[in-house]
Image (cartoon, rainbow, N blue to C red):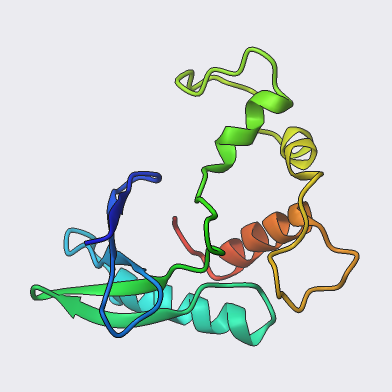
Amino acid sequence: MAGLQTQGQHPHDWLEHPSQKRTGLFQPARPERDRSFGEDVVEKLASELARLVGIPVAPVQLAVRDGVRCALVADVRLPNWELQAGHALMPEVVFNDDPDDPGQRGHNVEAIGQALARFATPPDSALPSTFRAFDVFAGYLVFDAVIAHSE
């Protein structure tokens, strides 16, 4: 195990394999969910569909670890870069931001746009040069809605 990702609803392990340069995020299929497809398969399908329509996305492999089916999501961070939750940017644009307050009103389209304004698209993406990070963010939201992705 190379680390633990604690962001999101469920913690996931970062795994490393001697034959791979990069780590992969172990996202187990959760058997308690009553779905015809496992979450691992849905994650793989979403990744492939996104790639086909030109959305920057991490490659996903289906795998099994200790008898548990999973989606193994490649780590696409650049060397020496960190993964940060988007909420880390909110204090720059929302004053008195309280991440523990469920009634916080700072998460709105305008504030998110301001927080992402200084960022570009992912490196090496094939997106138009006029696109910025907010365009990618909006695209991910629309894509997730179109495919009914629940995370």
